[in-house]
Every structure is written in C-alpha cells, then in structure tokens.
Image 1: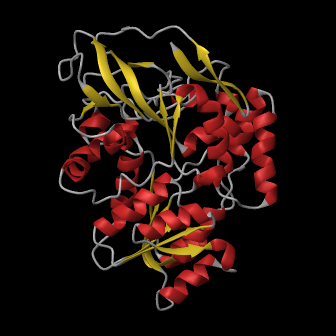
Image 2: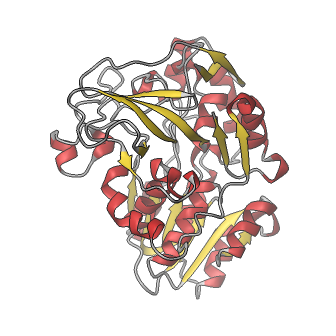
Length: 394
C-alpha cells in the first residue's frame, strides 16, 4: 500500500509499505477513504523527530470502510463505514470505565510514562502506524471504531476522530455556561471548532485571537468576534477592555507549542530537534523549550475565579510558570488529550440532524490526493494559500 512516512525533520514522503493485517483477535483493518492532517502532526514534522524512526507512518484522523475484523470484534463488520478515534482505548479498564479513554491502562506507553497509545504518534505514544495511508490496522477495534451512517460526505463525520471531540472536550472542560464570555486563543481547526461549540453551549460572547487573515475571516463568518493580535499591543488588555475590565469567564487555549513566542524559545525548540536523539529527548523533556506565548495570553486574559481549558499540545516542560498569579486569581486549569468516545453520543446528533449547527461543512480548505501529502504538509505549516485544514484522499 501507499502511506505517508516520516523521513527526517521537515521531510515526509509517500512510500510503498507492507499492507497491514490482523495481528490480534481484537484488530480490524480498514480501507481509508479520508484522512486529515492535524496541527500536532506538525510537531512531528518539525520538532519531535527524536521519538520517530525513518519510515514511521503518520496520521491520526482517519475514516474508511471495514475490510476485515478479528474474531473478538462484533460491533462492526466488513463493509461498515467507520471513523477511528486518534486514541487507542480498550473500553473496559479502570480508566476507560470512568470515561478517561486517553489514559487507557491497556494501551498506556509505560516505558515512556505516557497515556493511551495514539495512531501515528511516535515512541512517546506506542509507535502505532498511522492513518495517512491506504489501509490501517486498528488495535482494540472491539471498542474504538465509531460506526457512521451513509448519506453524508466523509467530512461530516471525519472530525469525530479528533477535531470535533477534542474541541467539545475543550469547551466542556472550560465549564462554559449560558451568558459567559469565552476567549479562544488560536484559530486553527481546534480553535475554530472550540469557538463554535462554546457558542452552541450558550456562551453569550465568544472572542477569538489570531493573526492569520483567512483564519480570522472563517471565524467571523461563523459568528465569532475576533481580535487580530497583529493590531493590538496587549491581547489580555484588549480582552479586559471588552469585558468591563474583568477578563473572560472562560479561556480555551488552542495553540500549544506552535505559538509564536520569544525568538530564544523558538530557536531552542528547533535546536533540540537537531540534536542526537538521546540528548534531544532529554532537552525536550527537561529544559523547558516549549513556547509559552499562548499560555501567558490565557493566564492574563482570564478573569479572577475563571477557568482555563488547555487543549493545545505541549511537548516539554514550560518554565517559568506564573503560579503566584494563578493562585492569587483563583484560576481553575483543566487540560489533556481528548477522551474521544466520551463525547461521541453528545456530538453525533448535531451531525445527523437538521442543518449544520457546528459549521462542520465550513472547516476544510484543501482536499488533496494522498500522493500530494508532502506538499500539503508544506502549505499547512507555512499557512500558505489560506490553508486551515487539509483532507487527504487515498
């Protein structure tokens, strides 16, 4: 089969690799019909190469048609149309039984001290081959795959794999209530959907911050107030001016380590990625090379006794952390990988009912064949050609 593979920092290519096959009785194999590129894939592209091997297959936002199932997989069968959650969860361990599917104890990567395995996401999370490919082996398929109905294009359901469920968790964990003012930092795909979901959950005002014109325009046409960070000197101060000097009730931080922070931190991230793997891992894990611009914006813009939901991905230890200010303000922090299947039953009716209340049909800006994936990564990284979200078609 053909698959998008990591070949080195800043380099990916589509290669011919062995077809996946059933290895465990709880496996399935699916034929991919659509697979998306995620912002966190750029972390692998640019920074986290010390956790990858040349030839690793990337991608964790796939859907397709079931080709084959193992003997213990009974809820899906060949021919079914399914979306595959990005986290691999068993559905029955102590963590899964409490809805913490991203911390599944069956698939935790214990040698790395990390949570549930993820598709296409390095040694840190199990080094499981990903879904930017023609076919995908799905472990724990007795639980994970989400069966979806016919009669809609793939893109109506594809984002259940990550973007929609991650954004739903971001808004839920921000404790969004009717009448709230919600600030969203960053208008990539997660920020776009988090803002729309916050509004759907009853927020009176949703304000989003970015500097890319196409992203700001997409948010605005979906009813979101915007702040162009290139036109204000201080984003938290601009937010306070819009909120009677108080700040936002809830902040969703949807940027993570892609934030454009200090040049020193940016250079440190790039330098860490170029070191020999053992040294690079230590640097990433202990030297605090994350860029903190988006976090500081969130900390400064939230009101006293407000809530910050951190859904942007961070890959190292971020210092310094302003604990005194956060403690004084009485801020609640929640964060972590999305527990995808925890939210599917809440989101699915919004995708299969009348209309498109979350604006799912207005997210994808580029559709490309799998063979053009290297070009897609390049324009997504550079934000060229108005690129906000890319779907690849194997």
